[in-house]
Image (cartoon, rainbow, N blue to C red; front, side, top):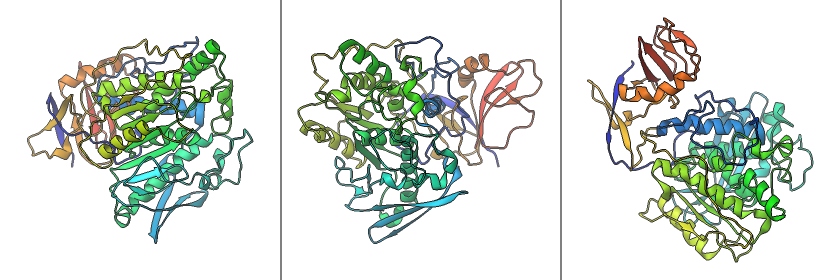
Length: 496
């Protein structure tokens, strides 16, 4: 039975949820990648601008915007991360061993992890325990069980386990696509046996350093069930902007990890020949895909290869997305030097602990942390960008952030708090059976999208897909987001 909820806006303060129950809230967005820019542009692309050119104004629209970035990353950098619907996952927990079995139409593989530690939060380290996350159950991701780690630019190994379940992707993806897929399947297994593990799956942390810092970043960005992502000394291909890294080497002559000299097997080999100034995206947007969840970023400026000028400026640009959500204390950074590679400085350990205590342990801790700007004589830390930061309204998922206006449901029938939802033409839909219909106050949000869509205003049909395809005058029953047009009135409908 369908229920219709009229959304009305007013100011409300509700605690912000820091992770979500599905891997990708925007899975129904039908996002696509954008072509390479015709003219090189060294400025960072606007993270708030959809590929159509329309800027988002509602938090719910971030679900589809981040999926456009995901498509750009898959097209130009890492290749396809397989959709979870293409596999079935089972899990067992015996003794101290978690075993996750993933089966596709082509075969089956196992991921195993030795569980240690205590606490109801989860710490997933890349190939080892997450050393910077304490007081949680340690459930490491053993990456060689998916594809083997190598620092060389040798060809991919067809015998890697991943290609037993996805043989058609051999030679078509970089290892970060496979590793991020493996992290998500490990999380699937943790969710399946959470009661046996005695863990709370709303408290999942990832941590990695160096190549594994990139791995943790991609893992956290591409799976919204991750609550906190700790990115340590990730360098080029991680937090760093490909554009800014190119510019840094051109200006200083210092060789750092860039798009043309990074690994051709971690990433698509074809990426290395691209001009980063023509990419439709950059890595401030990869970092921003974590929003509105939590992340803390650690650098080490004296290590030249890391290119922390680029990493710092990219982080500051990414932080503007959290600013738009009104939660800048959900992203922190510490670029302290004076320590070995992957050995956190004392201030970094303290600051990571603050994020762990707040987001994985529920403590009332200050995480408004902007520590230790990188201080190297050759660095130019100009963080000016060419776009402005909008104040996003509404909600993301079904959760309202503390500093914004939110949409709540009202109906002639009694609505529970779980009915709270934000609507936009690009918001996500769940698989439940309720329908939400926007009020006239939300209709303005859809107007720019209609102006860029093929929807024919003279058409007599009343229901359309988000692409403007006419669907007829019978209300769709399949879960999704639709356009409803009656005369000159245009509304957005979520079918759940």
